[in-house]
Amino acid sequence: MQHFPNNLDNQIEKGTMRKKIIGTEAPADEDARGWLNLDHIASVEVTSEDPSFPIEAALGSNGGSGWRASEPGPQLIRILFDVPMNIHRMKLRFDEDAITRTQEFTVRWSSAAGGSPREVIRQQWNFSPHGSTTETEDYALSLEKVSILELEINPDISSGKAQCSLSSWRLG
Image (tube, rainbow, N blue to C red):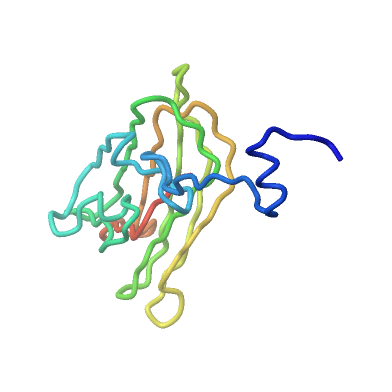
């Protein structure tokens, strides 16, 4: 039998495993599900905002009422990262149970190296109060060194008179 130092001899004889309990808390910039905690790593710009539905209610990891624009028509939400981030997943959720409309959203990003924003996603969705009231999109991405991420929403491509809203936007 191989000889181990005394403290290991005792553990082997007793049949115990050497182990160490480590913290399970996620880093300050991530929540437990791997979503980025934007409060700690970015600032946000919006073209308008209903004070009762602020943007942090859609971007926060603890849920909330979502964001709503203060005026009708297309809107822009821009996330400016403090340091460039790699984005591998994006999940968006929109809810509409009051009017029938076709919404289009576009996601663009800019790298730390600069240059013009590049479009990565363009999506249309038809909302109907008696059918389709929720749009949830979950994308696998490979965006490296993202400095700026933009979400442009046109809430009604036919009339432009609908109010923009966003229930949640998560990045990982």
